[in-house]
Length: 226
Image (tube, rainbow, N blue to C red; front, top):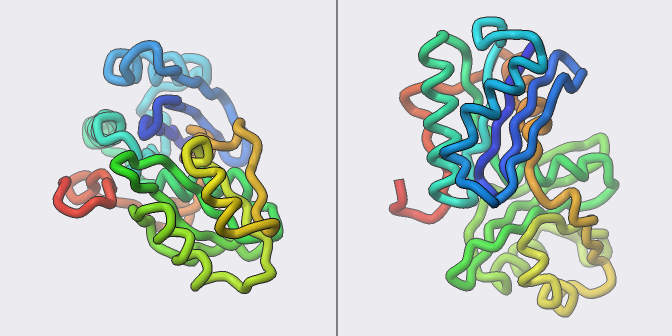
């Protein structure tokens, strides 16, 4: 199953092509130029590296946020247009889930954390290891409120792995609040990869699940921003 995965919800955009369990190609976009000017050329390059066209794809997966409002809109609009034009399934994937999935094999609670600005964070709670499970919806909360939310979902002695760029801003607050049971992932795991977006999309597609071109929208989390 050939799936194109795209995420532009953070400054580090990522595009990847997978074929079954195999990563065929992956390309990272840094912050130097806007995603809007480079996304389509990057997608074209990925398809050429994989020696396929969009007609050969079985579907496309796209990060729907939360994250950068402009970046999410660019990614979602681009993939919706491609899938509609060639009549391929589209799958929306949570940015927070894609980041948490980088640590899926850790035997712990996994909390992706992004800086939402306005003194707020984007976050969610997952359980890792063989029991991969979402324990909360995607949230936008002040850091203290989010940490209180974590305490409600987790036993006081469990390990909690945090991951995401929000640690640069709120890492000290997290450690002061939750103590020694907190671990921070290496920075290389802080962003959603196109390969992970594609993999999560493929899982849903294999289960016969996909989204509608018409109803799929960015997940800004903050109310009133659609």
